[in-house]
Image 1: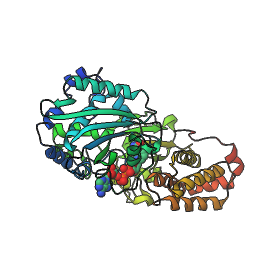
Image 2: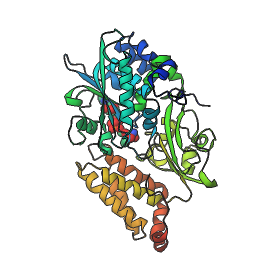
Image 3: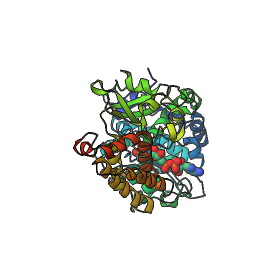
Amino acid sequence: MSRKLLLENAHIEGIRYYDVYRKNGGYRSVEKALKMTPEEVVEEVKKSGLRGRGGAGFPTGMKWSFIAKPEGVPRHLVCNADESEPGTFKDRYLMEFLPHLLIEGLIVSSYALGSNTTYIYIRGEYAWIPDILEQAIAEAKANGFLGKNILNTGFDCEIYVQRGAGAYICGEETALIESLEGKRGNPRIKPPFPAVKGAWDRPTVVNNVETLAAVVPIINMGGEEYAKIGVGRSTGTKLISACGNINKPGVYEIDMTISVEEFIFSEEWCGGIKNGKRLKACIPGGSSVPILPANLLLKTAKGEPRMMNYESLADGGFATGTMMGSGGFIVFDEDQCVVKNTYTLARFYRHESCGQCSPCREGTGWMEKLLLRLEKGQGKTSDIDLLWDIQSKIEGNTICPLGDAAAWPVAAAIRHFRDEFEWHVTHAAEAQTRNYGLAHY
Ligand code: NAI
């Protein structure tokens, strides 16, 4: 049984509302943190080893300590609730069922960073969630946890919910900031990082929903205790949204000491592959991270069981490993067509490219066209090589990581499933009539 820090109270009826949340220990971390100095709060988060849960896994305490503090310039905390990575839906679950956990984490984090005006930027498609968040904000304010002079400490904080309009690129932190400022969501060149020059050119920290929620148990239990959970640099717990051909799709909280095999096949988690089929492959960290075939997924190249943590999932680099990413765990059974699924992803990235950088704007379109051609049995062997060439020219050549995110799935699919691409060339007629694979994630 894995330890639960975030979802521990998710089953309690009415936990979405302040009274029930408070009765069950809610807002204790605010009371505790506001008795500490902001620097001490940052120190606890550093000690916890918490890494950003949006996908990049950057150490949160370190990011916080990078925030510039020019005299007289306001600073901002922005919660990235633009969760758009295909296969990822854990932040939605947190916001929908435990909104006060996020608000509590935001108040503590705002205090640590000196942000008196904090934003939650939420993707447009989560249309029903802003109301839930706004109600939680109003309840927190009515009970003295937000607004002026919180708990008589002299700390003021307001939280505003800003709705996006349904663009994947606005989850990239600098595009998000542009959109928050009312402009088109085009990514900015980094550096300067937002911690130095962010929203309205002010120092800004952008953190994912789950990262900010994790600040609550960190303050309650202390950073050192939190760091004891997990393994190595994968401390604490991680939310995984599991989907695809499994018996029990859903959002799970794991403590990063379980193996991938246990996660997929145990009744406690995914409950095995649906309809008694065999496991073919998995994209374990949201659509941007490399797909792995079952043999490499369950065991590392060294023959050790692969574990559900940052280091083990990445073991072997992209030659034989993948990434923890956002925790969007997409499982494929033996009937899934890798070419078709890769095409589906390529179509998504082409649609979502902002168009600023030529390699991404043009390359994603070419990849989509080639994949469709191959998938339909109209491709040539040289198309596979061309596809490889295009993805290699996108990777690392764009302002933001959308280019890499579009290139990596294609590269991994060819690296591990080249025979399946070739089958689409040599069995053209069959490829044209077969219609398997997920049309949409
Ligand atoms: P990144 O590695 O560029 O940055 C991570 C964070 O650390 C950023 O907030 C950045 O500002 C900060 N940072 C890094 N170096 C810094 C420095 N020297 N000074 C100050 N701050 C610094 O990665 P990024 O672009 O934030 O995220 C990419 C990841 O996002 C991908 O790996 C993917 O897994 C994930 N992703 C998640 C999605 C979701 O829906 N959750 C959607 C799309 C991508």
